[in-house]
Image (cartoon, rainbow, N blue to C red; front, side, top):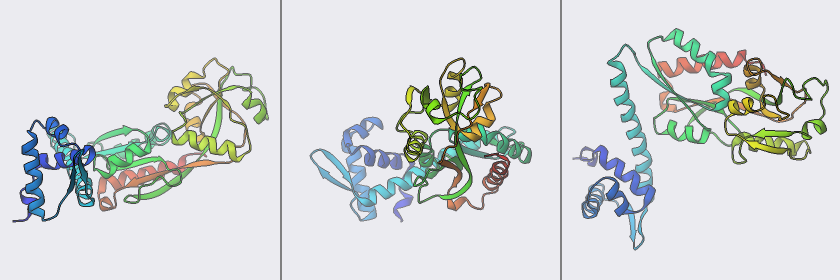
Length: 306
């Protein structure tokens, strides 16, 4: 009998944690089993597949390449099974089908509402789950099967090699201020003027901040006084109200929020820009719901003025 017939979901979860922690006693506590029982299972599993999975040493376990690959596959299996359980719950109700979408903050504001509105008109009874996060977190969830499709800011080098990728549109940067800001009424604002005021910006490790820093450096400009750091662009836009703060954002985001938040986009040319794109698993290329949503996202991106 093939070894896969003997393995259980709990075994896969333990394998993943063993590869992540390399500590048998800690994994045994997490799964409420004795360490000898866990050690026995590892030995039986290795005997079944006829290949060692771990290098044992005094400090614990070091996963060998096969263990790491099996753990990667196991994450996908566990993620898919979790999704299957969710589908059973949802389809007991009026919902017919399910779609899980991951979006970066820029997409959540600028592109998702229009794309999702069109998709809902096409599939009014499909349950849609949305997760908003940075692209590195969304990529891992897409690979594990927790998400079906991701739309995000795709800066150079970020798309994972195991995923399909399609660029949707460019997202140029801009600077925005509140309507009472001293620069809001000035035509032809200069960079010297913009850099004389404090800015709200994302933390230094964020992709948007890295792009912003590279852009300013490429233009030969000094770094602004980043007086406030905020991880969420919507929060950043709210913070500039009735202040002399300047907030950098994508032009697409600014066009969506400037009316409701009473913002003015400064007339400054910014050389660099990011891009917005779709990510999906190649094996899902024929899934109707995923393809329909991606088509909606493509059509919505064409309507975005950049």
